[in-house]
Image 1 (cartoon, rainbow, N blue to C red):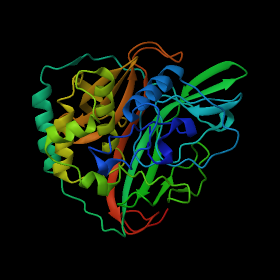
Image 2 (cartoon, rainbow, N blue to C red):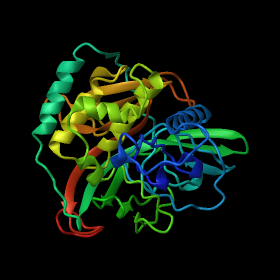
Image 3 (tube, rainbow, N blue to C red):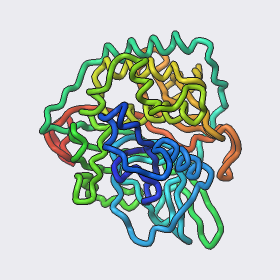
Image 4 (tube, rainbow, N blue to C red):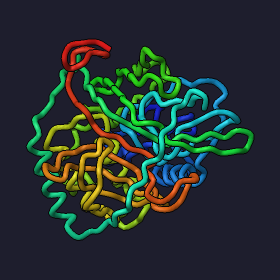
Amino acid sequence: MTTDPKRRNDPFKGEPFTHESLDHAEFGLLLPAPGDPALPADRHTLLKEHLMDEITRTAPAPARPRLRRTAWIALPVAATLVAGAVAIGQWGPGAGAHEDVRAGGATAEPEVLRLEPGTTEGLPAAVERISLAAAKQPALEPRADQFIYVESKVSFLRSENNNGEEKNWITPLHQRQIWKSPDGTKGFLYEPGHGLIDKKGEDLDDGEHGTGDNRHSYNSVKALPTDPEALLKRLYQGGKPGDHDADWMAFKEIGQLLQEQIAPPSTSAALYEAAARIPGVTLVDKTVDAAGRPGIAIAFTIGDKRKEWVFDKNTYDYLGQREVLLKAAYGMEPGTVTGQTTVVRRAVVDAKKELPDGRKV
């Protein structure tokens, strides 16, 4: 469950996630100017989304690509495997997630929850409390030369196809640390022991192959409107509320903006208020985060899974996100948690690989 955009966000290039593009004409802050595809950009994105959700695995990765992304953890994605190779499945981490060999991938007993129903009853009141809690959070304002530091605990689904025999498993909950510059062009990921990420970490700086798509950067998030209606209109990228695909895309984009990033308190509050206006969004009154802390969740069902943003049951502070199967899939039963993340710490530091206490990784 970790996550990240850039060339990073195209599953057809080996990425474990998809971050759909936003309409440049309406929201230039979040996307570089589009080209001239045969289909409109939003329709092209939807087709990609459906393809990846339905297939679950796709094209071989002959050589280790240097995969990089910028944001959270988690969107439904399918990866294509070669025989004996492994890829992150429906929920995966963000920047730096890689394929690896099964022999090197640790497994964990899947966590199976009692499925709690989602409801719209109580949703407005819960979101109001969540927004008020977000608005009261102290603002973290990085300088241009500083870095945003986010430490998380994450777990995600991986899949293996060995000569036509498919195996799926859940990775153990493990530490993930990421550093990102405010403009999104520089960063560093430290998640040793998972994927092919080097034990010394992985540089996420833009290079000659960078796309310049930093729509989830701090600078872009800070520039978002704080009027929930205006914000939601832009996030819909020309789609219409009530169209399930467009609703999912808007919900997912907000989830990306919450992941491994910081935002001004007023912007965070507006994102939650906007989410509550998306058709299909529900309140799950009883859940827990990856650390076992009791909470409530703002959720959206897509296909056979439900994506949840988890908030503390008493303080309404954001805790993390999780993905839960509603139907049997991947050889796993309903209620299985296929991806989760919990935020341990967010801070502003002066350099990559620097911890909030001044030590270095």
